[in-house]
Every structure is written in structure tokens, then in C-alpha cells.
Length: 196
Image (tube, rainbow, N blue to C red; front, side, top):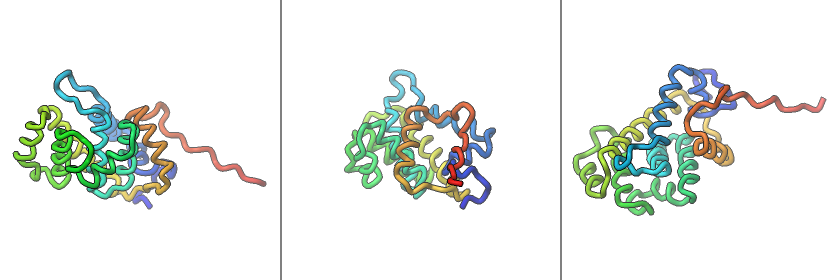
């Protein structure tokens, strides 16, 4: 049960974002830029699916069920299959991703442990695999940002639905609308009809 009153129909971070729209706006904008924005040509070739893999990996390692499920589903939809995200979370080095992505995911994993755990060797490996400065920067920032989100969600004891169908809907919403707040917010569902 959340530590503060939140809309019951908005589990996880969504309810927290609705609770404080003023703090939610920069959170949503930064997430939209990092996970959906386009970099200038030549600066980053990370796909939206690869960026979602970083979010899913970090959330998995932080044991934040809501974020892990949501971003795994978003990655699955963007990649068009369901194996890569699971493989990345199980073992980066054997996952079916490029050498550059393996190196960047290792940088993300180190960032999740602690900022000072990112080593010159890990960054050099990413560069040798073809990662640009922008890709290294964005990987660290996405990983750090999701550590913040994971702590926000878990620190407020938000609800994480257990029904996989919920994350099918949420993943579709993330992929097709991004991280922007829908016009008018998230209205509560109509009350259930009663047989009186």
C-alpha cells in the first residue's frame, strides 16, 4: 500500500507523476528526450528498443517490479520479439545484441551499482566496440535516471500489478505515446455497474 494517497487506477510511477504535476513535467520531458528523442546524425545510433533495454536491465537489477515489467514490455514491442530483453537481464555477455550494445549494457550495469563503479576500462571497451561519446553519455544518464525512478517507485511503496495483461497495455502506451502526459491526464475508470 502506498505511503501517500494515490489514485488506485494509476499504479507505479504513473500515480506519483499525477500526484505532483510540477515535478512530473521535467521527469516526463527528460525521459521523452532520452528514450524517444533523436540524436544529431553520427552522434548516436541507439534505437528506442536498445534504450528501453537499458531501462529494463537497470530496473531488473534494482528489483523494481513495476519498472522492470513496463520497460521489458516496451523493449519487446520495439524489438519485435520477446527474447532479447530477457536474455540481457539474465546475462549481458550471452545476449543476442551487438558487441557495442553489450559494452554499453555493462556500463549501465556498473552505473546501477554506483557511479564510481564505471571504470575507464568499461568505457574503453564501449569505445573500441564503436560507441560514440553521446551513446556513452546517454547510457550512463538513462541508467542513473532509472535508478532514480526505481527508488521513487519503491520508496513510496507504489503498487505493481501482477497481471501481465496490464503491462501489455502499458508497454503499448509507452511505445505509441511515449512518456508525455495524455491531454486531460488519466481519468479514473467508470464505477462498476451494480445489479440493484
